[in-house]
Image 1: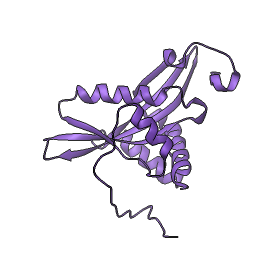
Image 2: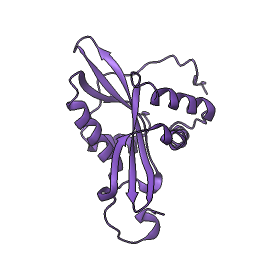
Image 3: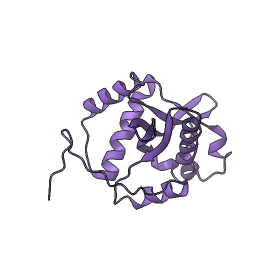
Image 4: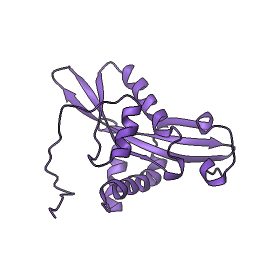
Length: 177
């Protein structure tokens, strides 16, 4: 079993030497669901319906026209373990005649944070997007009170947009306190 260097206090080979960032596959769905549920609880205090979340995850994995998930997988010996994820969805821009890739559902297992896992996933997204002729840019939204995530996003070169997001959510509507 692979354990986090934070957990065992040893100095193993750097994690990134054994990290593979790849497109998610259907067999990753259970872990993606757990990560997404943990992210929603951690960042917004929301407990998601796991059946709905699983169905939504499978719907994306089976429909590349909607987007895709990327996962960070640690490979050592016979052990493979997902350490993080992000989801990409598309927004068409008539102004640019291209699609923005929206980074969403970012999650890194807490035991593996601050070890450049997100950085590696972001680098892979950017490299892939830059070689895709119909992609005009990459965007990301973040909960406005999540300062830690915002600091990470700035470190990888993302900058705040001049746009604010407004919504009407038919499924997870917020209640005013």
